[in-house]
Length: 282
Image (cartoon, rainbow, N blue to C red; front, top):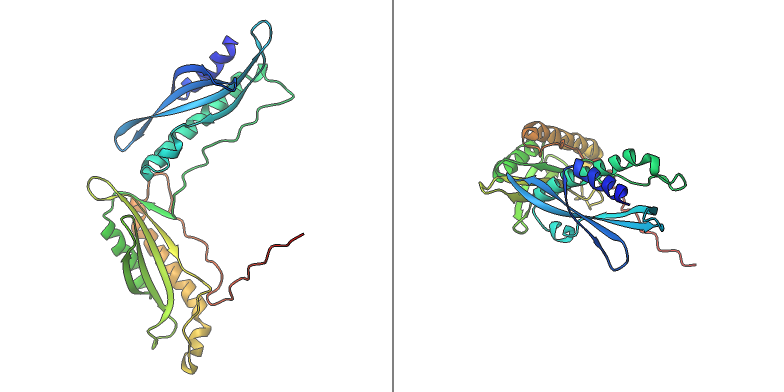
């Protein structure tokens, strides 16, 4: 039993966890308690981690069947409402460290493993992921907006509105002209979600594309029929031009370890909205 505990604790300590206690819970499982020091925003934040273990012993107090049941972060619900950068730092550092600890347990405990069960573990860390499409740090939010407006204006979009939704969300609305002589066009939006540091710079600011490809388009009229026929190809080219220009201008500010992603284009403009199939009752 002591060897099993030593194996588990040393594996977590080698992954930079600090062991604090082993406690028995009401359901009979043992709780191995650790904490991890997360570096975030120039500070260190302690994150508690609990590993629940079934310690089934034989008469000699040796493992008859000891197995790792669950690793959890007790404060995770409250941490999910904390700043995005803390959530990103926590995910990258703590989850990858948990994976490292399990890999060590697998490697060092291979000889004592029950061959009938094997080692069943799925990595928790699956790479950097943003809450929205693209994430930026260190840039003034107004400068980021200017870059967005410039990129889309050069590509032929016309700015139609700049609305603040709440303390975090704002929205830039553009119109892509169906024909040169028409004021109305395709409604296209960029959503900007912002959290700021002490200097009021993005920490981070994240943008995402928002538009409905099935939106009702303005009537083209006889003179605009030829423009309507080329709308899809013109819009696709203009959208890609704007996104490429935005990528080029903002890559320096991308959140560390992330890349600028161009979202896949959905259905063609003006295509019929898919019908929702009614549930089949049996």
